[in-house]
Image (cartoon, rainbow, N blue to C red):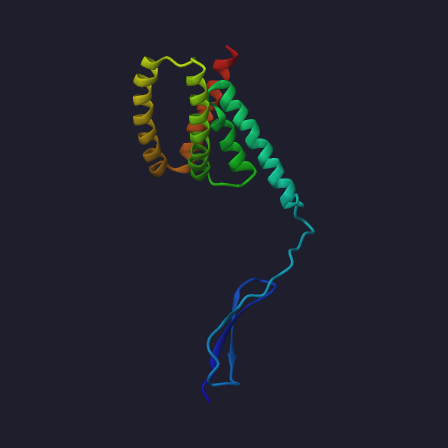
Length: 166
């Protein structure tokens, strides 16, 4: 009699365990996933999903106010939020922050333009440089090590903070 292998997941170790099944020749190879309750003795309790969503929504509002009020800078708050609260890796946090801040900056810029607060010559000249720098920065984010990206970002945040104090 030919035996077939059935793949199960061990409840305690969450590892695949192969067992021989000699009962049936026709039994196909299958994967059975069994759920496991989490051991919460030594782990911090996570807030319920609704509380976490509300908290992230609140932080998003703060980021929006900062970006709208100062005309930028929301990304400097958004990156640490993504890294610390959502546990995003360094590069993904920066890329996601840019994706979040871009439409927000576009909306803020539109409001400033309609309120007559934007001069067209600096907008055009500096805007071209910003576009080129943005493309260059996105390529650098791909190739630079995450640790170096973190160091550069930290230095920029310190510089910006000291500059605002002085």
